[in-house]
Amino acid sequence: MHTVVVGTQKGGSGKSTLATGLAVAAMEDGQRVGIIETDPQGTVSKWGRRRTNPEPRIARVSTPIEIERALLFLRRDGYTLAMIDTAPTDNALSVSAYNAADLCLIPARPSPADIEAALPTLDAIRKLDKPFAFVLNQSPARSFRLSEAAMALNAVGVLALPYIVQRNDHQDALGAGLGVTEFAPEGKAAEEIRGLWSWVLKKLTTESFNHEQTPIRAVS
Ligand SMILES: Nc1ncnc2c1ncn2[C@@H]1O[C@H](COP(=O)(O)OP(=O)(O)OP(=O)(O)O)[C@@H](O)[C@H]1O
Ligand SMILES: [Mg+2]
Image (cartoon, rainbow, N blue to C red):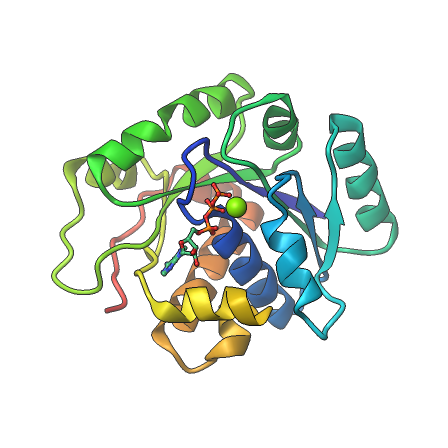
């Protein structure tokens, strides 16, 4: 079982949106997926209550031991992917989640200020020596030029691609209790999330991919 953690202390950057969107895209790709939610705001469990499909399995946890137990149960029950959605803080619970990760995804809006706001999280993740990648989320749709900060992330192979454009489908899917690939399967938001899931899967399964430089490709 692979464990992917979506984390950044910066609020509203898209952790829960990406966690739910990627979880469903992974399910559609044949994974058995559980989401572990460490955020007391409960965005993912509220989303789960709006679903009719019991998958992905959702577990709310509030202590590091509960994270371990939830991971153990998922592994025991044959799940292949655990996605952990964290709160907008690098508290002890978030750090325990980062520590359980095979890959940490750090969502950030593509502005220098927003990328800077994620740096404390990056420090916490690097102290644990965990693989990580930034996901540029809520990017403007057209004529978007990557900032120098984002180019630098790409150059050192820690930018997940494609970047995710600001699109209503994400908000509507969250509200409807659906993954964006369920909500509007033919839409561009779904296409981007499927692309991001492919990137994540490749990162999880290909060792040499970790330091590979990836081309920048936008879906506009
Ligand atoms: N790519 C996107 N396009 C449009 N809206 C988005 C996108 N990503 C996130 N949003 C919206 O932005 C808001 C914040 O997203 P979300 O709740 O996923 O962030 P978060 O990082 O989990 O927040 P918190 O730090 O409070 O947990 C939500 O209303 C969500 O629907
Ligand atoms: Mg959230």
